[in-house]
Figure 1 (spheres, rainbow over the protein chains, first blue to last red):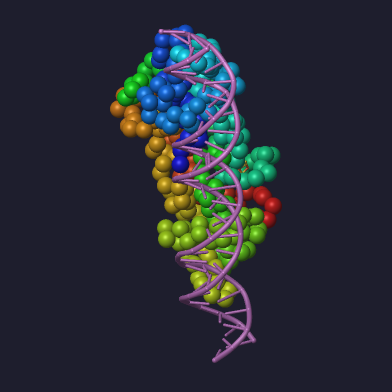
Figure 2 (cartoon, chains in turn green, red, cyan, purple):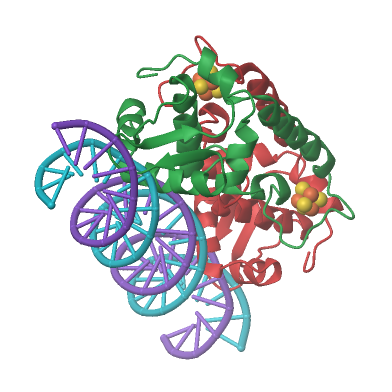
Length: 141
Length: 141
DNA sequence: ATTTATTAAGATAATTTTGTCTTAATATAA
DNA sequence: TTATATTAAGACAAAATTATCTTAATAAAT
Ligand code: SF4
Ligand code: SF4
């Protein structure tokens, strides 16, 4: 199992960090991305389709087409990517899986959990692709 | 998708909180637990098998058999339950899914993430079934 | 125009997770 | 000793997630 994000979402983040490292205003093909960061090509294709729909990347069909980011790399946060792919479940649902609990009479872990969760959301909102692209050192990046 | 723990693990936590609410030293049947907290009976059966193997509950076959907690309710933490069912992946793997990253040269989110994660582990280590059983108010509990 | 490299999209498949069914073993009660 | 209620265990099934394959649409280069 993954930690918090789905596999799909993890791939999205990794792929966008890769895109953010490339020269701006050039079309990068799925094939390139998938090969370089070593994730399944066609699965990534579908992920990119979602990201196009959400306005995070733009696509160009045909010869020497591909994808590029719509906004500047310092305007796209991890949070945005997660919302686009996984939605908000990770920050709205009960961590112990209790259904129908809206914390009107919170259990002994709720408030602390909420604070931890909020810290996490703050973290991924603050971190932009820019920073990660700049600093991350992985094989192929 | 669940938040952090697998469904299986969420069920385990819920079931053990239920057990912790029952009178000590009485055998509680899977059927009772499953019906009361509204989770699949046979799935819960397998979960309890794992918990028996890990020494968190003890089982008694046959007529008027069932399960009960081995230790006292204030000695079993959520952390213990999670380790038994989900293992340690949630606190050891990369949150963005990068393989082969042991944070020797940490990326811009690693340290903050680590600190948040450690807070969470501390939280679930500190909360015992006792507290939750005592305070949680859910239908059927 | 034709070829080629690409995304888009849908069908299919594999894997993992979750859930159900069935039978055997076992312990109690009658 | 027989009937009954239970866990144990394994087979099976359904659903969700992840991954692959195929074809169509499209755009550029020749
Ligand atoms: S109060 Fe407790 S049980 Fe309810 S949603 Fe919050 S963490 Fe879950
Ligand atoms: S340093 Fe960054 S990429 Fe590496 S494990 Fe930590 S969070 Fe993941």
